[in-house]
Length: 195
Image (cartoon, rainbow, N blue to C red; front, side):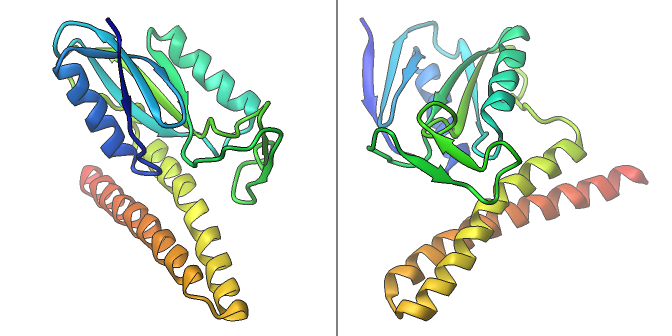
C-alpha cells in the first residue's frame, strides 16, 4: 500500500534529499512528487538514495535533455516545485536564468524548478556533480536567484519603506551566504588538490 506525506522544503535542497533518504531507510521509495505531496511505495530499507538539484535556471529543452541523460544512466527522476504557485496559465520572469529559461510557463519549467534524482544504493555517496568546475558552476547558478531577490528587496524596501521587503532580503541573504560558503569550500579544496 502506498503512503502519502505532505512536506514543503522550498529551496532547502539538502534537507529534502536527507528526508527522502530517511524515508528510503524506513522502507519507502518515491513514486510521485507534487506541490506539497510526496507519494511512496514500499521497498527494502535503504534500497535507494536521492539527490535534489536546482534546474530552474535552465531552459525547458535543456532541463528535459538533462533529465533524459540522467534516466539513460539508469536514474529515476521527478520534477518538483520550489515555490507554491497555485495559478494556472501563469508566466514567471527569471532574469537570472540561462538564455531560454528566463520566461517560465506551465508548459515549460514553472513548478518544475527542482529535479529529484533516485539511484539504487551502492553504498557510495550520491553526487551528481563530481568535478570542481562543475560544482562551482552549479553553486554560482544557485546563487543568482538570491542575488536578484536581494537587489529587488532592497530597491522595493527603499521605495515602499516596508518591513516585508526586509524579510525577503534576509531570506535571499541566507541563500547567498550558503552558496558562498560552499563555493569557498570548493575553491579551497581545489587549491589543496593542485599541490
